Image 1: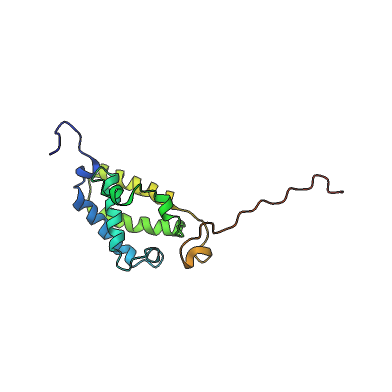
Image 2: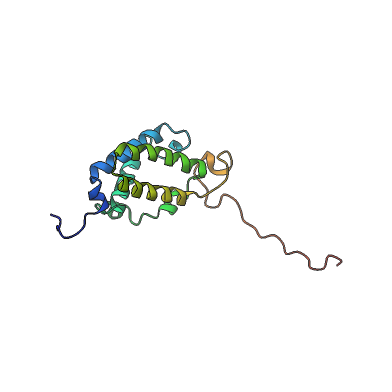
Amino acid sequence: MTDPASPLSFFDEVGGHDTFVRLVDVFYRGVAADEVLKPMYPEEDLGPARERLTLFLEQYWGGPTTYSQERGHPRLRMRHAAFHVDPDARDRWLGHMRVAVDELHLPPLHEATLWDYLQRAAYAMVNTFEPAGIGPAAGPRAAASLPITAAPPADPDPAR
């Protein structure tokens, strides 16, 4: 039972578990047909990915802490580092998520709050600006896709 004196969480205000399940189901319907995003998911049926995203979003918005109990700290950037997340992937992700958010028909303040977070999260996951046809697009992203080496110091006296 909730204490009537304590404010409701965003999770509760938007409808709890059922709302986040609907959001994630619509989102993954789009991902399943997306030629750029689908290959980033190791499971063919996307079921485990659906479950992880649902649990993460529920916890983030004040619902059950099942995500952390099962998977530990979210570490979103670390968990996405193995994938080629460029601006195209980000924009596709946001496109599918926009459709999902719109289908919830949330009140304007809740919709804006949720969308603001999703946009910030998507921009934070970008880990490369390489075109998809270069480097890690063929598979998981390597720990360091481009070697970084310092240029040799310039000779201060070119006459030597």
